[in-house]
Image 1 (cartoon, rainbow, N blue to C red):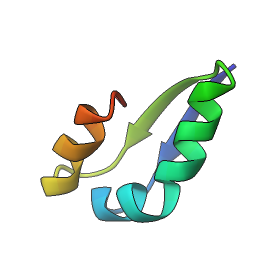
Image 2 (image 1 turned 90 degrees about the vertical axis):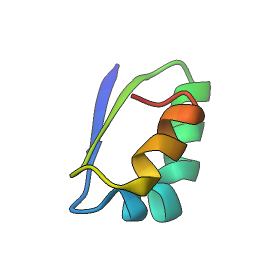
Image 3 (image 1 turned 120 degrees about the horizontal axis):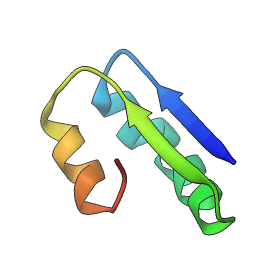
Amino acid sequence: MKILLFANTDWYLFNFRRSLATSLREEGHELLLVSPAGTYGKKLCELGFR
């Protein structure tokens, strides 16, 4: 299943949705995380998220 997670900051995705995103990815889902650019976007990319 393709899943889109979005928020108004990349900080929010990193701090509050990272564990959910990791679990969903481990279950085999395709994820896309969307937010305005910020310093946490790079950290999410380093973890293998798009």
